[in-house]
Length: 160
Image 1 (cartoon, helix red, strand yellow):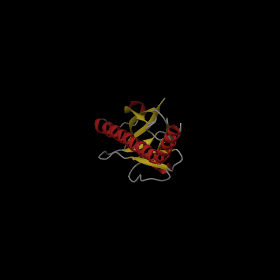
Image 2: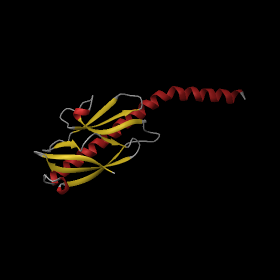
Image 3: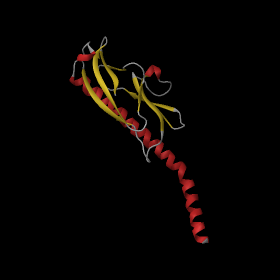
Image 4: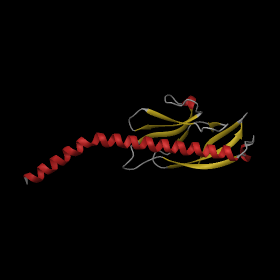
């Protein structure tokens, strides 16, 4: 009986010692996966600009959709909120040269920003209306339209 109690106590102590490292790994993994999602949006913007011509009428504009997957489950840290926002709405973060950023906050942490700055394209990126809230634990579909707002502009909106 004493062996069982000691085994349980040792297991609990080991688990308690490992929890901070596990939480740190989950936060790092979540941040890396969100960086990857921002890269996917950047590549979609680049493809749209490279293959299309901007037009003034948004209903006639070239468009594409992209699905943003916010990590969830055991291997991901819980996320309070995640959104695409214009950089002037973003309070902190390295968004130099970017018009739009993916911003998020991991449960209880500070707000982080990942710039959406597709390199090598001659177009600006803008959000349709206000910041676009994304589902914090699942998929969100975005539509990208190439319009002419005094120059080629990729407008990002949410589908559904």
